[in-house]
Image (cartoon, rainbow, N blue to C red; front, side):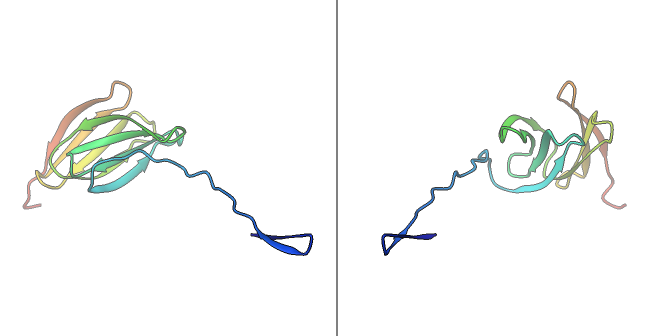
Amino acid sequence: MQAELLGFRVALLIKRKEKKYPRTRTYLNALAITPNGQYAYVTNNGANGVQLINTTTNSIIVTESVGNGPIGEAITPNNQFVYVTNSADNSIDMINQTALLVAPLVIVSPSL
């Protein structure tokens, strides 16, 4: 941005506030936002986990361990459960959002 000051051109430098996002291990695959927009769940294939992020503070609240190779998740409309699909062991885990507990739910046959 430039401004004119007493016949001289002056370049104005505006320092932008950089938004800081939480650092995570690599291999992030999918993102699901809770219906109220307050939280985000991110599958982390590199750590075999799902990270719960507060979208207001952009901070990781907790990382939950799930099956091998998590590649996606879905949140139920009532905001009670998160279902996580795991590609390496053909399984689905269920996270209870209230208690933040993970329960192995299903092992899917590879022949399906």
